[in-house]
Image 1 (cartoon, rainbow, N blue to C red):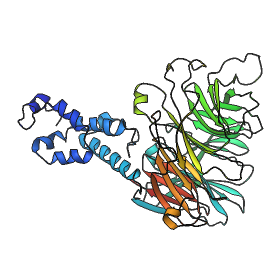
Image 2 (cartoon, rainbow, N blue to C red):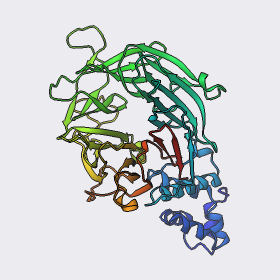
Image 3 (cartoon, rainbow, N blue to C red):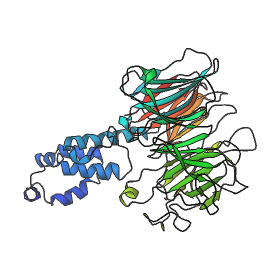
Image 4 (tube, one colour):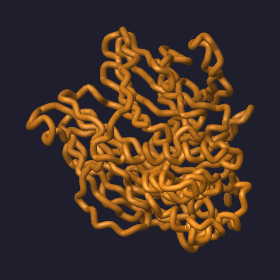
Length: 489
């Protein structure tokens, strides 16, 4: 229908204004008003079937608002028809409306994976980015006998099924990290007596053969981040340096990041790697590094060493830190760094953390020149994080808690605030969330509360959460090893 020229629409008596001006008006209407307009006349019916209109609406109502598009998975918009663009737009807005509702309605809830061994618990969960938004990685720890079971689940089917399983029983176990680049064959890294890089054969019929080793690095280290062919680790000793590795066929250490300051606590809480720079959040500091290798000033064996370009120190020690680059349509179009959301729960002098979540933003530096080498005089972000809001999130002594942060601004957490639903109690959990405000915008919502409450229960069996905003899924892990999947699309 787009083949019909604009001039022919202008000559219709039922359209007193040009089509381009009508488009300018329609893009500011709610979706339901546009669909209602379709029913008023044949002309409006035809107009609201135009591919050019739905391409405009998808961009202005969804993409420019940084709303995820379900079932999109990186497809090219140029090859989609008008009805396909309309379906994507409607699906995205319906999901966002339900997702941000104070009481989101789960369209599907399914329990799966109940381990037979006693003393089993979920210690890690994360959805694989991209790849059709259908895979969930979980790690279950069993106390007797001591073992760790790593599994990949297909959650897009009616009853989630395990398609890959790896059991680790011998030697040390230092956790796993998931590759944030969906185009890389390396799915994850696992730390045992060595650092193993693993792929998954999604077509393999035997789950125990589906994890495929790609490469390994000898030695024990902390693994923190995997992005494409780059692995970031830390030497476990106090004061241990952070190392950046190229994990291609022959893994090699490209550069070491060293902070000579004696005042900072060296434990790494979160990391962000982009282009030629890296941001590291430790227990009481945020550090900015250049990751461009240069010869050491004093010739020493080993990889080149990089020192912090800038550093910010928190007033208090952090207990947990979650950091995620915010999807920003405007930043991507202008080739600028996107804001980074940082959600912190600070520690205290007592054996329990503070009952408040603090939301900070690492704001892009307006003086940063993209394409120019990162340096002290060309930092991608302002050194001092901007405090945006605080969120009440009480946690009882020894009660499980967990936080997950999505790329589209969803903060999700487990806490003990259940009095508003089940009354005063010494147990109970809340699965709550909040859409973080657009980075860089002023806010007066200090001391605010959760804006979405997904579920409340009267016991303390939940201990881990994972979030996939693009598919509208939340996974919750239990202290008994079970998993529950909630779908909101």
